[in-house]
Amino acid sequence: MDIQKIGVIGAGQMGNGIAHVMALAGYDVVLNDISQQALDAAVNAVKKNLTRQASKGKINQIDVDAALGRISTTLMLADIGKTDLVIEAATERETVKQAIFEDLLPHLLPHTILTSNTSSISITRLASRTDRPERFMGFHFMNPVPVMQLVELIRGIATDEATFAACHAVVAKLGKTAASAEDFPAFIVNRILMPMINEAVYTLYEGVGNVKSIDESMKLGANHPMGPLELADFIGLDTCLAIMNVLHDGLADTKYRPCPLLTKYVEAGWLGRKTQRGFYDYR
Ligand code: CAA
Image 1 (tube, rainbow, N blue to C red):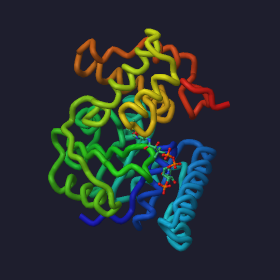
Image 2 (image 1 turned 120 degrees about the vertical axis):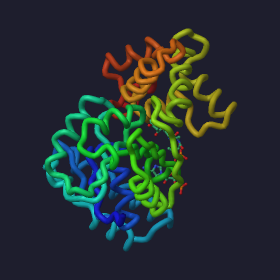
Image 3 (image 1 turned 135 degrees about the vertical axis):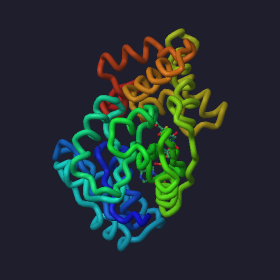
Image 4 (image 1 turned 30 degrees about the vertical axis):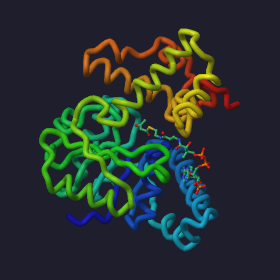
């Protein structure tokens, strides 16, 4: 199946990164959000990040202009329906994602493939609420999307091979590497990464180290590009907590219990970089 036009739902840091890489690879992109402010901020972020790539000599100004020219924005979910591939990148809450797919269904072309950029939620369950579970799968990018090489591709129980092959071909066209993961809570990357981040929060909670010593230990002692607390702030503490809850509920093992300190930060609205405050203060 030939994918040419891609709909991206959600203009946050993942959605704008996905729009960026898709447009740069030559796809026409329709980016949707419920807020015009979010759409404007997303286009500005794409412009800034493309310009950054151009200033490093990775692309040229013609690529920047062409990519920006391929991105259109819309507040109408219906406009997303007339595309070949939809990537939903809304908030990591199952009820939100289900409501979006439900609203989208009447507007879809028969051949449109539906995917979710969920980092943890069951693909099989999301697919079961649509009219096309065989053309539904997980398409999970890593943050920052323009930099990270990996895309996790997750088949739901009903996903057909043509759908998987079409998504695999898109990942190849992006110049990224696909990892195929089975549909179990948090798939591969977050099944491993989130318990590490949660353990770093426990390490802080129990006073074993402070924010600086924990992050420095993992950067200098384990060669991680970011410390786990800095990374948690970068991903968003609400997203980290949501993923830990999916692991805890889905695998019913106390080793996935979210650290109470992580819960407290989220309750305080200290969600990391996006709210200017998390384990670090960005104000
Ligand atoms: N768009 C385009 N380019 C970007 C960018 C963006 N948004 N962000 C960074 N870059 C580029 C920079 O221009 C720079 O390019 P060069 O190598 O050509 O100089 C390069 O990326 C490195 O950036 P910086 O020099 O600004 O900063 P850095 O060296 O500290 O790297 C980082 C930043 C790439 C984010 C690095 O710290 C890193 O890899 N951190 C870990 C990220 C990570 O683990 N991501 C996965 C999170 S888990 C996830 O996403 C799954 C989930 O579901 C939660």
